[in-house]
Image (cartoon, rainbow, N blue to C red; front, side, top):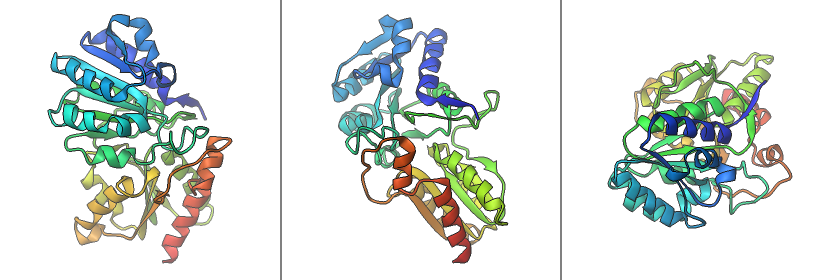
Length: 314
């Protein structure tokens, strides 16, 4: 399966946006080589602002640029974009609903070598709670490119959550992307899995494992955490014996919480037992490689398959 990097897709798409829209500007906090916003800086240096390791100030500058009619793309590690600059993001960007697009790179556990200080297990919850914030979590690099283009057209603040590593490509480049609508990746009739980010691929691998055992797993890609497609979430739950949510983030306030809220507030025929897989009220840690770290927190195809079997036995 072809591998691509979400960060590279973001950087390349940002350059393309800069060519088609002279109002697009990019801001960076000394991590342009990692977030790959540097490609925009190389092409359009007059519209690229390097603020140094001062994320809060960067967010305030982005707000000022948005007030002058620009579409400001702000890039840094997810843990810094959502945590260190939270007050400025909330007060200066989200309350006035300015056109600032935040790229949180190296999200989740994908920065496996730097440990818990650099691993953003809480970013989905932090961004999801902000009124009017759009929250994207792509399954692959192609979807990341679609989302970057979509953010330029969506009025108001957006958050894009990007994985650090090269990942399998599940999406066709010519496939239409609809913000706010879940995408069925694999149909099934026993258990539904709502997954986001790289977990979509792992859920599909789990479905293959279970197929040999006679269990049919439905896999749904929840690429837009907010606004959440409540109608789609409920539709895919109907007739299922149970549901799993899988995310590379805290289950508290993240995708798992969002899906439970939707299902419990809907009609009785869409209310199923939900098991939430993800970070269980813990921070991450350092590891030798990404997949070793995922295994340590039970974020593997084998574990997803095992939990689906438990749902069937419940």
